[in-house]
Length: 292
Image (spheres, rainbow, N blue to C red):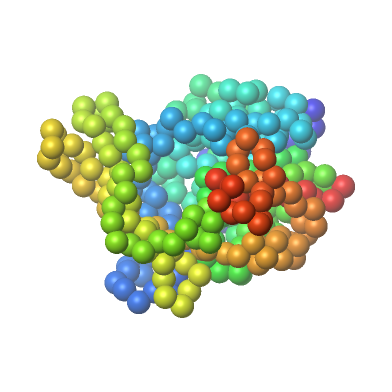
């Protein structure tokens, strides 16, 4: 087991929090950011996404190739702690980083029973400086897709690289538009359902996704509805933007950051990514290694 180099405070600001911004031709608050949008999700995120676990098993297996339980993992974009909880249950220590204080507050309450095994920091991954290095870093569930420009990605990859020990691994997954398929914005798709025990109502999330003309971006609107019978009692609308980066550009930016060894997977079952038959892949997963 590799010993941690230094403890991290339960709550701290590692940098000025900001998030990927975009220049789009429709109304948007100048203060808006992805962190602000995900803050809207905080109270209902676990209701809608809490049962997802296939990715967590993959990240646990990846961690096991590098460290034993008891070792430390940096999770970038920890949100309400869905994946962190699985990692903690498997015996790992986790430092969770996110730009949304509201999401992190839920993670802190939910994972309080793990004590010092779970540390967290509100931070922008492009500028974070945690003062320690990790053998494993992960960014699950499309987190890196929120880095909308080459500069954003380059800075994020570089900061993660700098937070890895020699020989350490960084693993993340994505679903860029060229893999997910054309998004025309013509209809709503029910993506998740759940039951809000506090409101005592069923909840559903419908999404509408469209591509941005002239930019490698996709915009998704999520409509979260609390239902009374066949009527909507409350609706929350969340707008998020994703970068549809090409695989060649992604690999080039990773190389710039120092990652010269990158393995590609096409599913959380560990199958190799098939570049010739994209339909054989359910996800794009990248495992990157810092040179020893």
